[in-house]
Image (tube, rainbow, N blue to C red):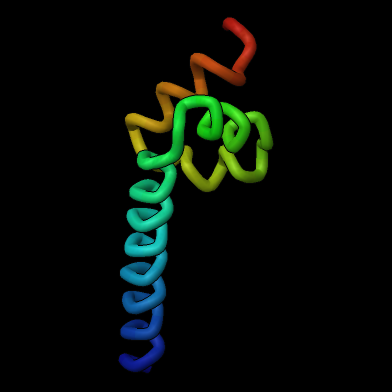
Length: 65
């Protein structure tokens, strides 16, 4: 039982690392390429966990509320 919990922890750590890596790659893209990436809802959803990216997503792709 304990091993399955550990596996979940490993998955969570791996997911966080991958999100961090994705954010690092995104941040080195040019602004126009970032906008292209954010225009795709599936790609934008991968970046929503980051507060900095979330602001860009909200300001560039979401309709005003």
